[in-house]
Image 1: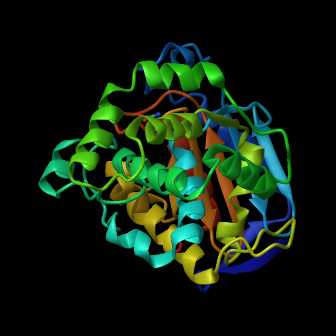
Image 2 (image 1 turned 180 degrees about the horizontal axis):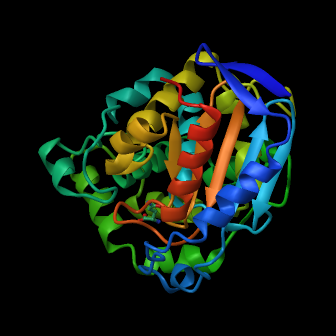
Length: 318
Ligand SMILES: NC(=O)CC[C@H](N)C(=O)O
C-alpha cells in the first residue's frame, strides 16, 4: 500500500508505515563515525555524541520518529529560518536591499566576502546574514526575542520551546567572530540598531532548544505553501514560502549546499548543534539530529539519514 502525494510535480511513493525504514536508517547511521561535536563553546562540547534522532512529519498530521526524537537540542543556525520568516513578514521586499540571495561558497562565519561586498551579506543563512536579520528584528520589535519565541511556539503548537541560557551566555563569551561581522556591517552602515543588542538577539536565537519532532512540526508551513497544517493558519504567503525554500536549497547547508542539492535534492537547513531540517514540498518535513559535525559544520549522521530517506522515497524536488 502506498500514499501517493505530489511534490514539485512528482508523485512521492511513501509507504503507509515508514517506521521500519526509519529504524533501519537510524541503525545504519549509528555506524557512521566521522564527525566531531562542536566545541567552540563548552555547553555544546559536552553533548553526548551518540544522540541520534530521525523524524518525519507529514502534512496529514502524522509524526513518525525513531531515536532521541523528543530530546531538545540546541537548534543553532536552524533558528535563522525562523528569524528570516519574521523579518520578511515585517519589512517585506525592502529586506533584499540589505542582504543578497546568492550562495556564498564560503564557510558560514567567513569575514572576507563581507568586506569585499561592502557589508552586504551574501544570504540570510550565513552568520552575517542572520545578524543582519537580527538587526531588522531588534529595530522593528520592541521585544524581538518574545516575538520570535511566540512565533516558534505557535508554529510547533507547543509552549514547551525554551532557550538554553548557558548556551546563550557562552555564545556571547566566545562571540568574537560574530561581533567582528556585526561591527564590519555597522561600518558600512548596514546595521541600524545598537550592535551589542543585535548580537544579543542573534546569540539568544541560536540558543533555542527544540526536539526533532518540534522542529519538524514547526517548519511544516514551508512544505504546505505557507500554511501551518495543524493550526490551519496562513503563516506566510505561498510566494514567500517558495522564496524561503529557494534560499534553503541554495544556501541552507552552507558551502555544502551544492553537494546536498546534488545528492538529496531538498531545501534544508542545518545547525552546529547537529540538527538538519529538510522540507519536502506538499508532503512534509524530515528532521534529523546527531551532534558530530563534518568539516562544513553539518551533522555527519544527519546528512546520512536524510540522504538515505530521501533517496529511498524518491523525494528530490528536481
Ligand atoms: N552554523 C551554526 O549553527 C552557527 C551558529 C553559531 N552559534 C555561530 O554563530 O557560530
